[in-house]
Image (cartoon, rainbow, N blue to C red; front, side, top):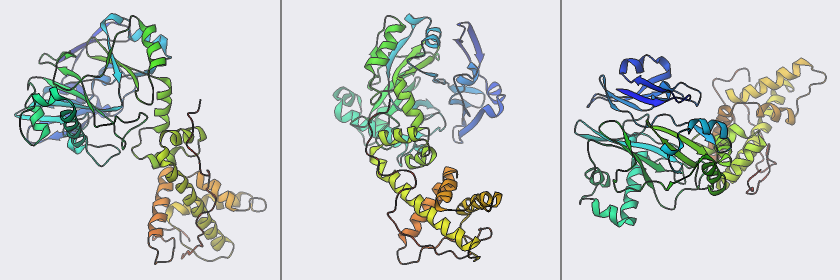
Length: 436
């Protein structure tokens, strides 16, 4: 299958999307999922950025049956903030040929029919019921929940559906098997990034690929499209993103152009908050990643006020761990007793003692030095320490001891623990106003 689109210099370029050409990309594009019953294989780029070549950008969720390309949907969507006027002017040069829609936070799902079966897939899983992010519910389950919500609130949609129990089967019965449907499943309170979730489970129809491979934004499947906008020129478009897009509710505007090209224009404030949040499913673990950066930490408190108590608890736990490590250090190197600490805590002891040995007379180990060394540990190590501490705290009938069969050079530590002391980094932080 050949795909033609314009590159950055607006020259028309054709690419032949054969399986051989995809596999020739090596580690850049990988086979990420397969279905043995139908012989479908799903390929997707390992990583892609705005600066990668156009062929790689097109290698997003490609579905093959042997050498036949079954599904080629939306490619990588470059993202820019609304202040990047020069780049956007070049990308949207044929402005009148583009269409514009609200950009919502969510997951892109593809619904297509092959060999007697409907597939609801993500870009990396052929079965969306086996894919999830930051929540216990799969994207497939959340999609069904959104359809059920649509049925209960949208009378016209409800009238289309045949009788039956399974909402997904009933919905698929209304679709054309020769078309491939694209949906944007909005985030909920569990997997949201920046934007507040909608009041009910929500899904949008964001395009349909016809039998000839072209994209249509006119097909009516009963599910609404995002709000569409009209702009006279790029100045009006960017002014809208800056002044009328609330980053607490929307990302910005997504632009659909010729040859299946998309560009997303983000509100700059949204982009900054998104970078603070990162692509990390666990909010508490993201806190461990950024806790030494005050601005990013403030952003997390602003974005997730309900997690503030967890963040503060983590700091108190880390303070207690620092005291225990300090006690272990004194037992081993001052009182000359053998003690044992787990591997992650030992790394802190080792860092402290290396610093001490560099200048034994002046480099005296204190609790502050232990805290300093603890703050230098990778977030994965901090997370293991916290989880171990919490598990030991749950066993109230057993004395608290740090032990490990893999511990290097230290044995039998039973430190004193006094909960509720001053946090390691932060005191209780109120919900913050959005920093400028």
